[in-house]
Amino acid sequence: MTIDLLIRAGRVLCAATGRDGPGAVAVHDGRIVDAGDGAGARVVLDFPDGTLVPGLVDMHAHPARGGSKYGICPDRYMLPAGVTTALSQGDAGALTWPAYRDDVVRACRTRVRMALNLSARGEATPLACYGDPADVDVSACVDAIARAGDDIWGISVNLSRFSCGGTDPCWVLDRALEAAERSRRPILFGAREDVDWPVAEQIALLRPGDVVTYCYMASRNVLEARARVHPAARAARARGVLFDVGHGTAAYDPEVARIAIADGFPPDTVSSDMYVMHVGRPARHDLPFVISQLVEAGMPETEAFAAATMRPAALLGLAGEVGTLAPGACADLAVLHRSQDGWRALRTFRAGDPR
Image (tube, rainbow, N blue to C red; front, side, top):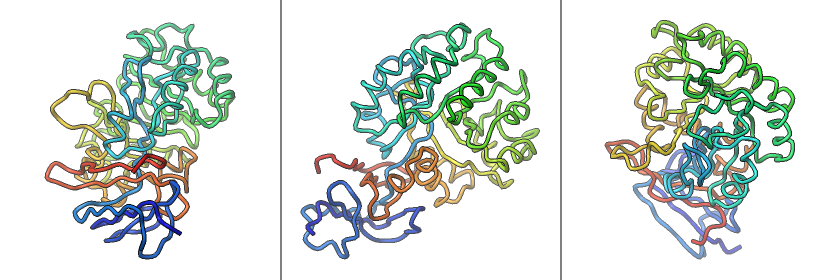
């Protein structure tokens, strides 16, 4: 067999297969192949100072090309940063999903999945997405999911004051849980501020497979008195609720992260919450940067990469297809370099792209 591409790197890191050391990955017909020493490859690329990893999987971001006040083009801003798969946190709702599907899911090189907004309008207006209770249409949400198949992973519900406006967050969560039960899909959940409704009471309502994002945010996080992990968070994890970083611009407190990790509560997934406010800022914000932040907070490096590759791939139903360098997997790859300001992407390879 003639190999299309052989990539050599000073370090090959894959949590799914346990690889961590110098090596190479061979690609043929868009798939990773077991090709021995790779002799006869059509193209050989060498990154002696790089780390080759599976294409990163961002469990909470805002990939969009119009139609969302938060959205940014994933091919322009995420793919060059090593992200080959991204989950949208509610950029579209039942009414706006068909346009989003055609303009983003089917048109972008980046693989995009959706956590459908409980609001039928998604984030299409500058107003609070649940500010008008009429937009919280459970039947429309369930019907859209039934028609979409695997393109829609689950349901997004953010109970923040900014998202709810004057609408009761308890009522919004009740509707979200109803939609989730009827559609048999998980929820990507953003909690209400603790002073309005204790976060412990909110996460007690979640089900196995639901994902709490912003888990290290200053005002709504997993800690009790900013000193230890709250028993309610541990109980939720024990029954199968998962916890995601959702870094964003104001949703990550490094001290909260440090305390939680030291107390044995690392995140299940590391995500960027990359959105329009990050574009044009002098400080870099992307998923490799967020991985660096979690390592700095005490998360072992290999675990941080697992939480941005293998684990979110499994949650999205893509285990074995992405998030791994195993033979037979899709050849979504990223080459990273670690410098003084953390991890940075050097090159991204999306299966099927010209070499």
